[in-house]
Image: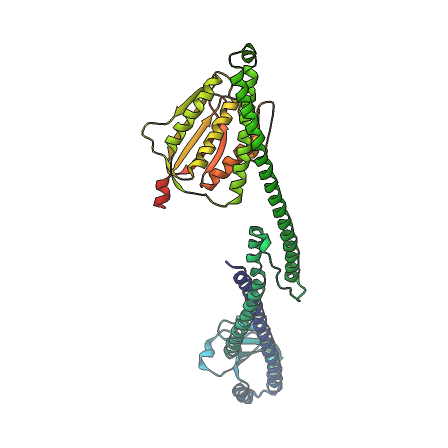
Length: 468
């Protein structure tokens, strides 16, 4: 639910509570005042009736008293008047409706609780020779309740009108406040995605919290835009410098490798050549490692320059894994290692992507596995199809990757625990991560069985992409 709608609903409910509260209080005040006036009038009428009864009863003129009470009932709107002696026997009883002749009075019952629509009051009165008695006067409460109901109905109408007005005002206020805040949301969401396209919001003169929020957002966006621009310039300079350095490395590296090859040929049949064979092998391995590091830097720089893949074609992972196993079998054999290819028979694992990049990823993983596997150890390349995903895994027989190093192992230039891991594990794996992510896959590392590390990556099968 949008913020403006929520604020409007909250303001509307608040307006409803105010209107309902005012209406209920107004009705209660009206009833309380009406009951108070009716009770005061009843007491005044009772006083007048008592005086009349006292005067004429003292003179014994009860017939004249009855006629006067009938006239008073007609003029004052009284329901019943009854005079009783001190024993409670009725001496005189006049009513404006024959239905009230047999009713039982309820003196002391509040006017808003009378059961039969007649409010009774009583008081003592001197009856002359008869001693003291009681006079009871009953007033019509039903008419009062009818008038109060009519007043309440009009009050409810006015209350509903007021509620609608308050609700509309509250809705507009909530929508206005919500709009002021909601218009900031897309700008907040867009800022971290592309800080360089930030444009300050138009300032407000309200001076409230929203205006302060706008000002703070403008300051934050300006700082972030400038910082992003500066970092982008530094990244560009860094990439250009790295590309120049790596390119300049390739020429002397080629010269060194050619020189080592030439020395091997010249010393092949001599006694010094046999003694220096291991040294030449180490020089070859070192130059080969340096060449791979240079290639990794170049490949990583090229991938960071473009957002997508250069080409997308069907890639047979089974054939690609078999080719990698064949190419690295001689290197593994030279190190007295066993290279195993584990592909179930009949497995078809075709993905869409850049075959050269995927092969480069697999080569990096296999090369690292050979580097970290001791002599007489086993390096395994496996391929499985799991649902709509193809999973390629490379297992080594080395010491494994410590759990605390796994979250950062695919970060550029990351090296951890150098006593257990020889060589750079940052550039090649950083390239692998970016290449697999460009293909819409995932890459990770886990423990191998019985020992070592298992690097794996998954790619969506071509069939699943076509079906989607």
